[in-house]
Amino acid sequence: MTYTLVLLRHGESQWNAKNLFTGWVDVPLSERGEKEAAAGGVLLKEENVLPDLLFTSLLRRAITTANLALNEADRHWIPVERSWRLNERHYGALQGLDKKATREKYGEEQFMQWRRSYDVPPPPIEAGSEFSQDGDPRYAGDPVPKTECLKDVLERLMPYWEGTIVPALQTGKTVMIAAHGNSLRAIVKHLDGISDDDIAGVNIPTGIPLVYELDEETLKPITKGGRYLDPEAQAKIDAVANQGK
Ligand SMILES: O=C(O)[C@@H](CO)OP(=O)(O)O
Image (cartoon, rainbow, N blue to C red; front, side):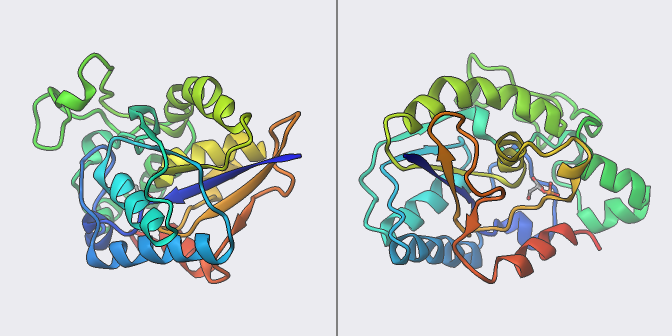
């Protein structure tokens, strides 16, 4: 027997469209992103991959994407649990900055180190600044990071993976996680056993369900990398990789 896990990155957000670093800023989907989310749900239905349980971050681009996708798949009614541990990587002082301008200002190497290195976080965000999450009631009682690298994301995500998502998978139900480029990269790194260096080359496209069948004993993927339900996924993966250019 295998367990089925569906990973869904939110559709294009308004800041994806503008090419701005987003992180924990709660930006809505663009019109195109709404369409991508619905199209993701159509794929779920066509492929008969029907989620029984939903997990999302606390950010509206993931929440709305899941709602739109599940609506198309007639699974809008399934139970849902949300956690800050599935949030996007906190982008520190880069939140709100233009990716292209940042690349031009600091150079390709620094830009890519902040964007894709495993363990170098961007500079921390200043408390109380425009795009900081201090005092946001949804995080009351939880630690709000000032910046995060992918390693930090993996470390805050794993307790939730082990304590909540794995037990849900073990019930045999199809589990969907609606989250973000970098929180999903952390899950993919864990599942596929990708090295700290190689994860830099992994990018997740917006709005396309990525389905993993997991071995019931080891919880490792039957097929490394899983399966994108849209055969055109590669073009969108390349677009994410090339952001800022
Ligand atoms: O800005 C962000 O929060 C993320 C995802 O959109 O960007 P990147 O792909 O550059 O890590």
